[in-house]
Image (cartoon, rainbow, N blue to C red; front, side, top):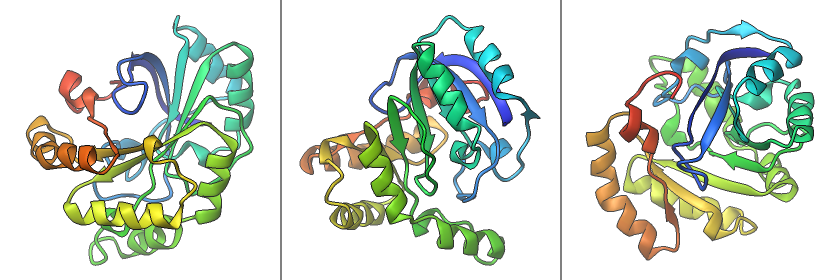
Length: 228
């Protein structure tokens, strides 16, 4: 597996916000969203090739029950299957963070899915190849249905505008099997001022539409920094 970093911090997003967790961050991504906050795992991927045993050794060096496998896009690596198996056998609570474009028959405790929309695509003029690849691969209905059928899950949408909220509603119409109380709306941004501006209208919108507002607490706690 190509790994960008393994570290212990606090989960800043989703239903387990505030939980002490070990993060295993894989490198490489198949989408390249324009707002990606970890470009060192996507646009300019960096990392080391580690065996599953080496990843486990580093992960177990932390005295922590929660393990979050994130990216990049961790589902690009088939080694995720034995990694999750070993983590589960060790009694760890495993969360997988994915964009929901790829499926692997793995075991985890929480599948955290963050589907992407056309609004997240890179510029068609500046990055035409990646724009095309983003639009061709970002929406995989069969994968989404397999993930939510196979796992406990949460669905996190990155919201930049009210138009994104409309897109979410259309998405949930397409997937009536997604339970509304598992849907989280997360403001797009990497600095507190911008996040606050979106939160001012997004949080009331969520309250009025039976959705959960999902802050990005790691930005509030640590700023945009690696290993946080």
